[in-house]
Length: 417
Image (tube, rainbow, N blue to C red; front, side):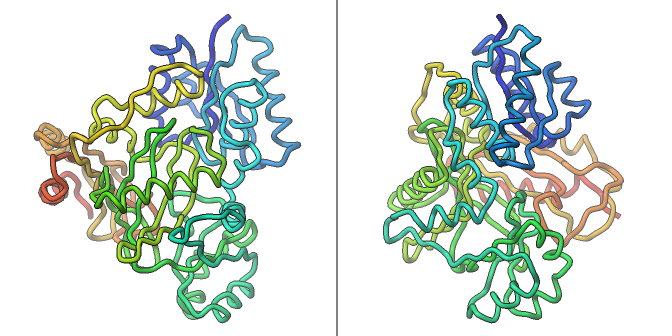
């Protein structure tokens, strides 16, 4: 009987990661992969013959039971044994966790899996949890109408942050400071009212970080975000250059968020705010899945010998092999590239890109937009970036200088008109 690892949900922009998982499953487990997602694409069929379209949009008990039966029916005519389940997207977490439990495989908590999709559900769990004094919990309220939004603004004497209950990639997220702000941004708010918007206290005077890893090996990543109405991530530095006390506090905060959201050592990417002056920490949101932007790859650069992808499939399949995080060899930075003016991406100079990639200390350069696509200088979510650069150095100070240098040169890769 052949062995199978099921991957639940993934965005096709992350096909690179799926190909890696396929290779690792073959090498480490002698297993093939199966993709369970909402829409199977031609790219998916090239990666594996084992694919199944499933409903990930609903996560009530009846729907989950029907989807698990659908998977069982698919496998009943094939000579395969499922040895691991990997929830790879927020929407894939409930089905992936429940299906793993039904097969007696390692899994994160099923009942709390909704908290990784529904942000209101997480805030309710968080509110009910006893936490240290430095772990702060923001005001929050779920709304479905513009009238409710107006009431939140008038009743709360503080800036507010509106974010859709079940979206990612910073889509639909916006800071609202007044009724005038709301009126000016109705086109952003209105599309999400029917499913619900979480209105939260807008946390100020904080820096953003994330808690990343799997199976007991975790690091803190520093995240820089844009200012203004929209918050998009512009830069990542790992490990975060912080004094030991604050770094340790963020590790503990990340563990608390994992406990609240039901992680049992599976993949996590918990987003946090830190006030360096007070030491207060807030959770932005939990994620029981690997971080994007190849962050796990860059952890392997900073910490040679650590492979979170392999650790994840080992955890999910009960395989043994574990390297413990120790001191980092490098600091690694990812900086996003964005258009300085709105227009159309007219050309990409592959020669300049190739030459920059040969520079010692440059880990990766990518242009994620295609020629002919529209680009904008007004960033609203992470999909508005043109691409990114990744560099490494032995100190964070040298790294920032190096990123500046490569970013200036990388601006010559693309032409906007």
